[in-house]
Image 1 (cartoon, rainbow, N blue to C red):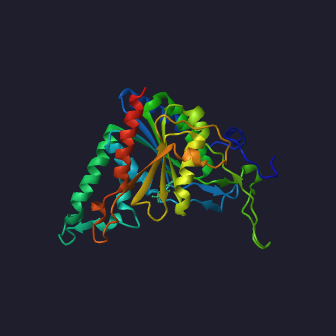
Image 2 (image 1 turned 60 degrees about the vertical axis):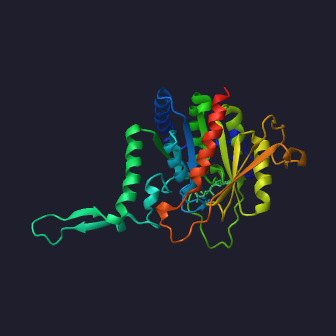
Image 3 (image 1 turned 180 degrees about the vertical axis):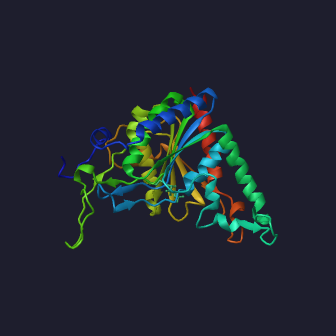
Length: 346
Ligand code: PAZ
């Protein structure tokens, strides 16, 4: 039993926090999916998407949430599929998903696209049809959706809590390691930095009436380190860094690369994330030095990184949503180029 907040290593985390009950079953399905894609010679990308929650009670009524609608992940998954990748789409339950994202209930409600025809004709049942002006766009999305289903190149997994996410990420990464360099990891989910270990959670709903609520949370273990060093040594790993203070974006992205030694950090500012991102990576021929967690990136190490900015114009509000250029299209083009070079370096 824990009474004091702790800093967990990944190993301690998995030794003390319970896996989601369906993990074994999910992983068997993932294994089958990967093995089929390997036989068909495809690269496979794991796309994580949406925000994780941190429950405050075992019988959960209250939880903390992380910001993310799942737009980045769902949109990127579509462009990876278009580029010929098989996609494991690991997303927060009820966040946006590839294809159906175009008809999100809040921005583009599907029912508004439908009409009931023939109600006046006696004896004949009414027919539901798609509004003529919407047919071409729907046909594009539907055609790709059906093709992806027919080819079996999209596999979906869901998480809700940060605990679900961590267990799934570890298991999927270990499964994907069989693909060696042909596996890519695109970690766009917004993952909680703090959590409450189950050993310190209240069993029942926390009661009010005792004044303010004080909760001391533990730091979620930094899982990129074991991912790079143990779970999937040859995978091409892309993490995201979200900031709201411009001055922190590049230093934090570089510090992450220095500390974890993976391939790319994509930095984005909360308010400009749909129009501007920066790829931060190591210059060829440099390698990360061993540094203790939490240490800042030194000025000397700054020279070892390169930045590649991607920008698209902010769209005019009059442009219909399906005609708006999406920055994910360019992100995926750039990543496919880099991953192809990574694969051919074997
Ligand atoms: O899903 P969305 O489009 O609303 O947001 C995407 C994002 C900002 C969560 C993603 O691009 C990102 O930066 N993810 C990592 C967040 C982090 O630093 O933990």
